[in-house]
Image 1 (spheres, rainbow, N blue to C red):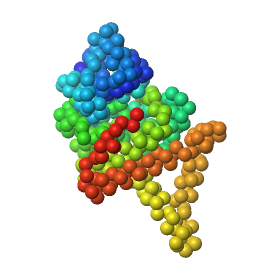
Image 2: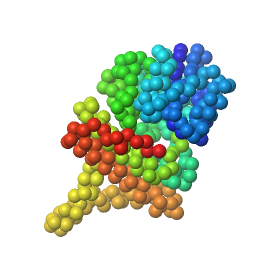
Image 3: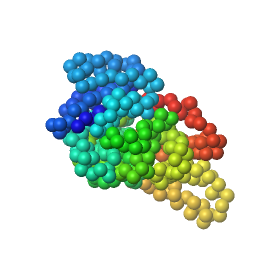
Image 4: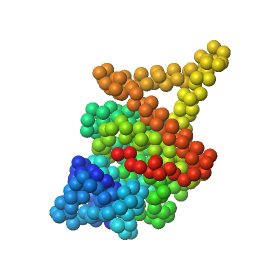
Length: 337
């Protein structure tokens, strides 16, 4: 049995060694031949030198150049580099797999051929105080939405997972990652998996440690791009991939129209203010539940930052892709880190 592990990477010197070492520390069936392909977007921070050092002592690691520097190209370059294997595992450079991650994924995929994709839960790890607060918000159902795999508490079928493993035959059936999609290429691919009849499964008994990016500016841009590119994915498929994606843009539209309530009778003003009141109460409740009081003010505004950034990106995507029939903006192809 052959397993390819693909690591898309750019400027991750601080994390790439731990990522690779965790992969080789994973339990594997005795008949499993594993190769790791680090697909690097021409890093200039010492990442490539770290990978080269690892390669000197481990012949199962390969360094693949990704001159276009973008994630979907990295995915496809790594998959093609491994050739036709039995299974493909994708691991983010900041993802540190639990020791049972690979073996459990292989076990589930071999036991149930209806499942075409398996992934585990994310344990967010902060590298500074800002990252700690962002981690808390991104682990919350109020922050990320009900049904998001990040908030599932037990193993179950889902619509997407992180650090997924696929049988190679999935790529033969539905193709590879869409290189037009700078963001949401995993959502697009997993939507195609489900559309083709495959199931995606979240395993709660495996996990990965994820080093959360710790800049608020990067968080804002990241979620703006998620919203923007989600509409492009919808246009490509001619349908929405999930219903929960509509809540952030709906909330932004509500905020834009909120001043018009002042023109309405008092009773209608009170009714119109109910959604904002409920949202504010949710902010208070979930922030108090997540963090200590000393971190309350530094945390509460991160929820609307994520929601409004995503919603604004989604609305701009609707204008660009649905109304004006444009192609993706070059500005929204820029990395958020």
